[in-house]
Length: 231
Image 1: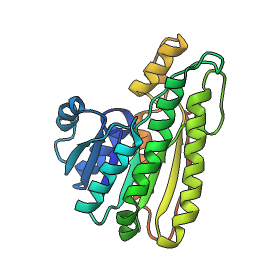
Image 2 (image 1 turned 90 degrees about the vertical axis):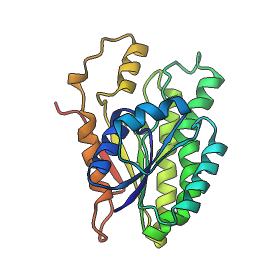
Image 3 (image 1 turned 60 degrees about the vertical axis):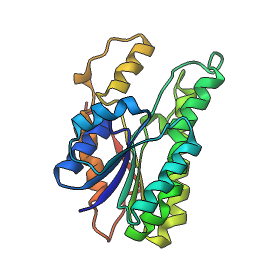
């Protein structure tokens, strides 16, 4: 039985990853942003180890929760950073609150949680998976703050990979294109476009890709994985 720490397990790709790991009997430690998110998550994932509240907009709180996890779980096989937020606006109109929120949730909190969990990840020669985005490879109009957070997340992964290679910790960035998730529906709303989930990647497809990263043999690593809609 392996132990995994997940953020963003309440919906979309994170939920699909959690379901698959739970179905095969792995131990899940899931972080949620507030107590009102616990009940729906527990209903969706009845088999788990623990659900902890950590407001991803408060990176210092996230680091403290990570330290608590390490005290109770000295060996952790993976941390999967799936949580994210997006607000679209041109730079000329974007507000400080939106910048700070996206940077905190999408970049700083993953960094602080990973930092706290490193002793347990090193003990397992474990894997860190950052769920990035196509916006982490190419930035378009109105995506400045979100793309900046995701470009930063890629840089974080690259640095961490170099720093932890000697300890045997693998670090992977996954860059999905548009995926049929509640977040994608929200993006379409902000873009003023009709949403048709059938046009985009299924969350289960990206989840299977992430499980492949977690299940790699000891002889290999996949630093980056890009998943695009077909056609």
